Amino acid sequence: MTSRRMLKRYATFNLVFIKVGIISRTITHCVYYFYIFRISLRCLFLRLSFL
Image (tube, rainbow, N blue to C red):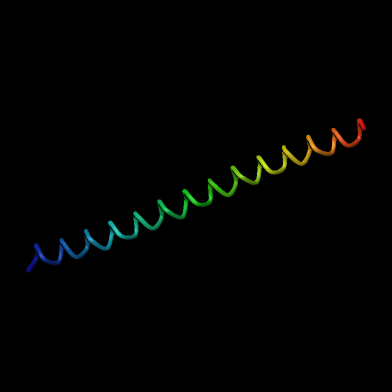
């Protein structure tokens, strides 16, 4: 019984760990794309101002 309980706890911990990893990865991707978007917008505005 104790081994089964340990297995269940380990499985839930694993699922939580995977979910947290996926969420953190998506957040980092969003921040990365947001920064790229801002830099590209700044370059576009600079180009327009030079024209």
